[in-house]
Image 1 (spheres, rainbow, N blue to C red):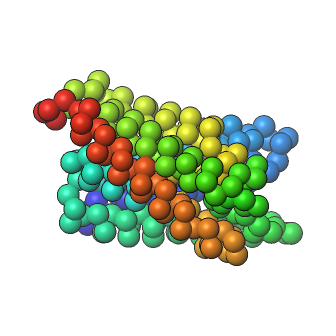
Image 2: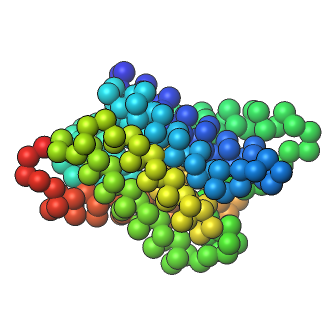
Image 3: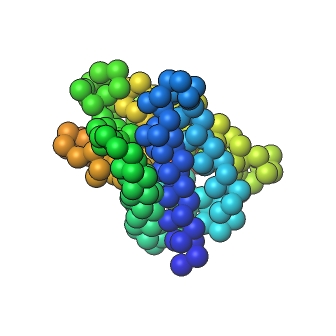
Amino acid sequence: MKKLVAEFFGTLWLVLGGCGSAVFAAAYPELGIGFVGVSIAFGLTVLTMAYAIGHISGCHLNPAVTIGLWAGGRFEAKDIVPYIISQVLGAITGATVIYLIATGKPGFEVGGFAANGFNDQSPDGYGLVAALVCEIAMTFMFLIIILGSTHSKAPKGFAGIAIGLGLTLIHLISIPVTNTSVNPARSTSQALFAGGEFMSQLWLFWVAPVIGALIAGIVYKFLSPDDE
């Protein structure tokens, strides 16, 4: 239960910090944040939670990470569904907090609400195939970073930094394409409020990250040293 509660609050923080920065600050150039600032914000949420709850739950914060760690032999199958439920509930709670704050400003419009999408819902108009390839590739690399930096033979104490910087780089690459998901829980939480086409496109932001994570788990099992 402690692990599930940790995943709930960790994913809440991921959404509140990352998506919150996009909703509250990125739309205002005079604040100097832009998509670079949002990228850093997402990386900081994972970095901070890695040290806050990594020793409790492993700090997955992401259904794709949970599935990828299972594929890589680092996680038990029986815990996958409870972890994913906790992550999705935490993400939705984080999005609800963002919504309650955002609607406190007169004239606020939900709009895209930091949701993910392709075609007209892509920040720069990228299509379905581009979005699919991007999300698979970015999630694949994210899991390679996670699996590698948390290996017993990796330098101790630096995994959170590598993972946080990895997620920052992923956002710097892919925000223009899909607004960056690599996390089905994060995507679900925003699509629920954005609605419309964002909900109808949500399937891609479950399918692509899971595919990327599964491939990464298999590949890293091949690359990894025999002993953990």
